[in-house]
Length: 395
Ligand code: ADP
Image (tube, rainbow, N blue to C red; front, side, top):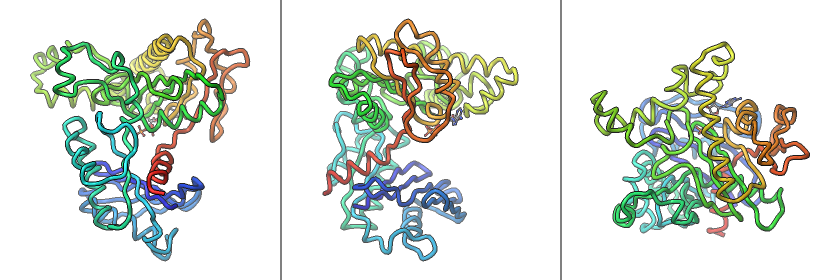
């Protein structure tokens, strides 16, 4: 079954065409700057990379363009759009409504819209993507896969904030967690390797946005992101955990309104804010190697925060069988992996420095033979989860 996987953002659109039965990736791409000017980067296989620069005023034109490219003579991977049998949409926020992927009907769309206050940047774009697909391919079923769904198994004590309980029941104030599709995929791959009945896995998804998840017996029991993706780890431009008292203090000192303070914490903080160099960790590592003090501190802070979560989740689960590193930083930075695991031998976590440095595609084991806890690098594949869920719901 050919599944078109779509991740619609406010001015961008990521897509993949996947044979969900065989997991074969037929084509993938990214449309950026929708409504500004427009650029489409399309990939077929390992070698064929094409870039198109042309005006793309709306998401509708973007999806029409992608469908044309998938079927056009020179670039085609399918003969006709009718070969697409289902569409899988990534949706950031499913609130407490969605505990797993669902077939989309009007009621599902209403609920995704209802959750817009909890994901004001993402859910509106997803709804646009869904509505356009229904319009352009009216006979093709659509499925939604939610970033929050995997974390719906968290126990109340791990998702509540210690504020008056009525604000949970009345205003839905709680931790939801994000990156659920990635945490599910990676922990599931780790469980296949561990091959044991009761497993304790910690996944570190470290990208521009980052989160840690404690996965016990295949279920998320705690995660670092919260009501919004601002909580938890130090990220590219987000501060992560912070004293709530900082907010009124800074608002007063700098004369910021609520919109400005959220922008400050989301866009100007994190690695970028501390280093003053970049949100791209590669540049910050380079600056640190060149002697830049603030870059060095930013890296120490980033790793310290991850270590703090690792240790607390190991405590929460009373042990840890495997630690998994994934996403841009987790998959590519041996420095960060080494620093995070450094000094944790006392807990049975022993990284093999040499294995950690070897770069090969696919899953890698980077622990010492003597390590009680296994340490894996597992490339994430959220699109494959979406394609498989879509296949299973549609078939
Ligand atoms: P997103 O959250 O946008 O999907 P990614 O998972 O692609 O992000 O991760 C992007 C981050 O990965 C950037 O901070 C980038 O600097 C970092 N990264 C990629 N390769 C390396 C590397 N070799 N060393 C350190 N950081 C890296």
